[in-house]
Image (cartoon, rainbow, N blue to C red; front, side):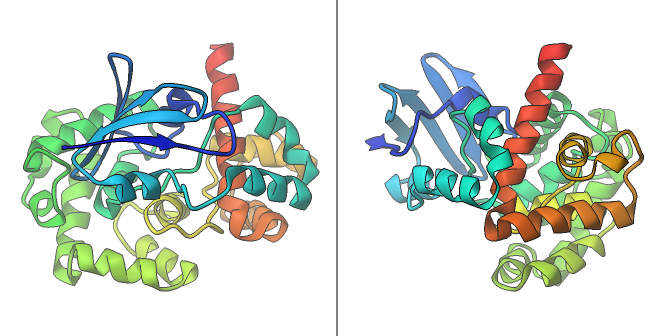
Length: 283
């Protein structure tokens, strides 16, 4: 095991907000802190001060630094978002402590978002933890998921996703498994998105989630109900209360990409969490 102290510069970090932000689904609260699980990587994180953290992990410091994007100056990034679009200011202020994460395990991200279709965070989280039953003490490899039967997953409450998950795993395994996903991440956003949409059960929103969180394409903008509500209020008032179509999806995603460029995905994250937390508060 590795033990280290890390300073996360830039601003206060809110681990609870990050854990529930819909970026990764195997965070859990532990005594005095949070545990973040990412593929075979495990980090027990304890906040000692506003920016100081103690970390106990099966991975060295470099893995933690990558997960939290410590190579990026958070303050500078927030300032650049404000320069590009001043309308984002209340979202940054209201959701202080949120950070854009960089998961290491592309396989876990992809199959986590296969669980997310027509679903909510708590149920997605339960499903993703259930999938670890098929791994060797961590999230399973693609070839392991390819051997899982539809009935096994349906018995665990996956519903129609019980058919999709093994089918996608089998296709990816035939294409090279984890190495195929690595190659997609090395290419372009548009090419990766096209390949993902060709998979069973993967539409534009899921493909954009995978592109953003698994492949680190910062221009990717997944448009779900929360993002649709925010972006129509901000930019497309004539569409408020209307249904999201493929044409509208491309329009609102394209608008955010044009406004924030490579930071569109970060802007999306603040919009998404703000709307999601407001929804929770109303409930």
